[in-house]
Image (tube, rainbow, N blue to C red; front, side, top):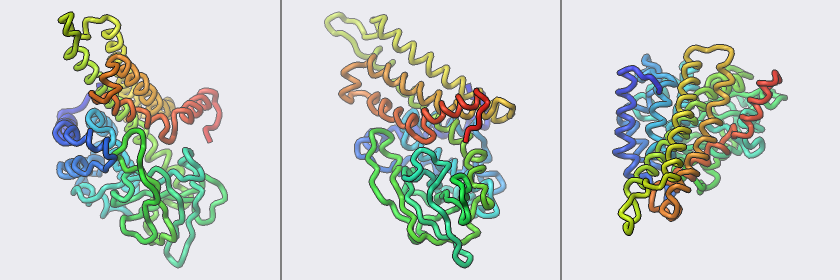
Length: 383
């Protein structure tokens, strides 16, 4: 459905090989222990995929959202935690690429597999309203001082670069913000809590504290007062379609696990597989249909991003929520179809069921997106 070129398909095939050869090997243990999937991230780095969206002039592959969603879909089928780490890296790279005069070194390092990026936006004070940090930068003789309590920073302590949001030093409005590049090892940056979640247990999405963190003023990734615009214009489209792709990959994994269970397990005393039961076949059919519908919608959103029109913004808002809600339904159906075998963790469905819950509560949450979509349809301002 993504209609890839031969070159794009070869990249996706490489990612799929990593997913089945590396991610699948460690996914269960990563989930059970709740550890960062270093093997998978390193495999992506070694194959040059940390440079997927890095412009070619900086050594990257120069790909756009079409290839990115196909890669994320493939990764999420085996390990949604690694897929989320990768998505947040791509979002960080998008910020770098918008200001190569600031982040050329990091772009080249990512293309060479030596730099993992992420976003540090959400704060305890503004919760899921990631676009409105409560922290406020301060100027100090050519340096910028950042003090913030960041929540849910994917790859916390593992990333090499953090795109940090903060109100501008003179800001009076919540959306008067800037984005800054904070590097691993900068003074005053620390992980401030554990990550022990229900799902996506390997993505290291822990809280972080920036305390008297002083960085050069020329590490600003936006012009003054332009952080909000960059969040919505540079990052949100990729973040939305990328999240959708991960949800769809989870759906695909659930369909596969359910199919294998229904066709490979049965009633020994009746000498018949579970697939002989029409109600279970109907559940599986529903899972397939809903997954295909979600992927078709995502492909339409990507088409619109490549050829923007008056409906593109609405489609971008729809992408994450439609796939997230589909993943909730599809994994629930899979759990019901496979019954006790799924509930007792004999299959992979319990992990897919739990991982699927992340997208609906990840900012912007499904409820927030529904509100935005409703306001847009009514001709109202979103913010």
